[in-house]
Length: 185
Image 1: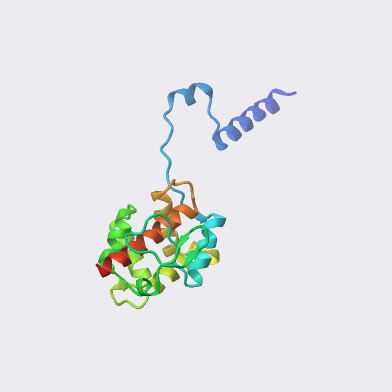
Image 2: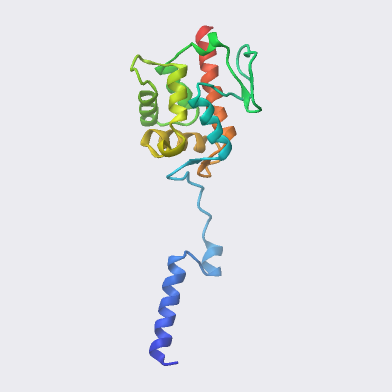
């Protein structure tokens, strides 16, 4: 093999290794592992996609303990449904923003999501508006700016792996259901 070809092969190998992110053993020992960052694009797991399907049909799924009486309608293994009187309660924009803050939302995210969910701009998020917002995170709509902002927030509140799972999504819907129940108190 000629020295020119050998040299080119070495350069090509160096560039390939640099581009693929491989490190020498010495450099990997001295560098600290990077903190996990939430993904730029977040998707739904198959189970979470099913929950958004329920939302699209007008069913709010919750898991865990709700701060109030439960409805008598059990809804699959994912949780329980609210009674009709509980489901009619809207959550004020302020309360919705507090809910989002509990998930770690920035001020900009709170404004964006509250405005996006409040479709009729009446200053409150109704059950139907919330369900439409959740349903919009699935399928081809899941890539919209509003949907991605919501999914990133929910994922970051969970395990920040780039996929919103059933539990992470149910935490958000349960928090909304609790906010509806507190409205009556």
